[in-house]
Length: 403
Image (tube, rainbow, N blue to C red; front, side, top):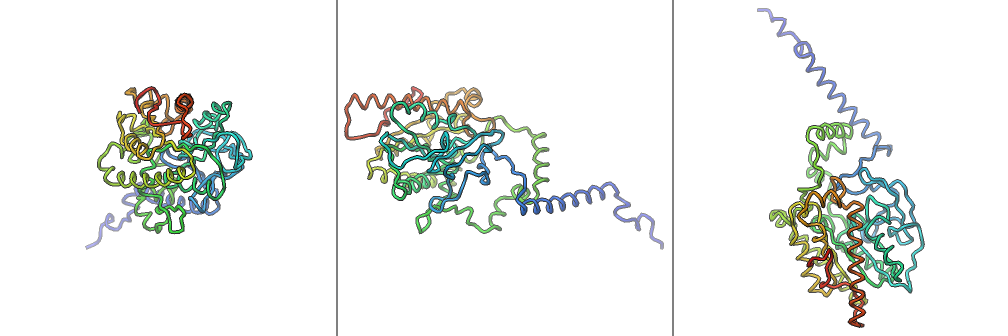
């Protein structure tokens, strides 16, 4: 019995359109793999703008690795090509690698009263010129009162790095400061639990980055693998996804910040992160106490805390208690942002689809700090307390609400 023509037909003859589409798809993927590999090797791969929960491009010319505390900003840098998402801005650093209003030499010793701020990307002020950030605004406001402000904050820092960097600055560099203000971020807790550890030699290491590549690939999943190996396919699919599922204007429902609200996240890593953060902050408090340098800790919400009305957040209560136990100052910015007017607050004070403050948010934080600080100075002078230089204490609040 003869085979029919249909039985002899090739797959292409039976399904010509489907076969052409399949071959075109395979060819595109192979071409994408090849082009991605070549451009990455050549160092000309297009740099994707960071997601809101990502980090600034490490290839930007003002960042460097630190052998002591993992990473830092380069000293004496003037860069007009910094970017955060759609925000373009200039970055200047001083001789110590602190973000500043210009390239300048910062002496290790000074006759003027000096406040050192440290924190993560909020404190560094990513996305904005120095004078628009809360630290820059505070510096400008207090300069005429004989007070200098230094900004040691850098993206992705957390308490273990706050302690290790300040220890290095005081003991090895010989920097003299009169007061330290730490802005503790919501994301610090996950970073302490999952990313940073102190090595046997006393340096801070990234234990995630130290994992074998195959383990990292298992964790990152298909999306992460495509982003690294098929950058054009990833970009194309990402654009299609955004057209079908438009992103929310607000950066909410993020595991990185929901640990204050979700008991499962608290159990998974939140409690461990808090305990590790507290241990690092206790080391910092002891270090500063031994040198007679007062410490103040400040806390503030992410969009998730605003959206969920998390006014009495564990981030606030935990660090309030910690400050009381260690005799440090405490500033609670939650009442400034968790007001019940969710859309108004997120629209007015946060970058669109981002966890960070916009220029107005930085202004609010700076104005409240300056007002509180001046009030604290006045109270200290009236009480004639000579045994402590700490201007801020737990009895003072910001935004005229109880802290």
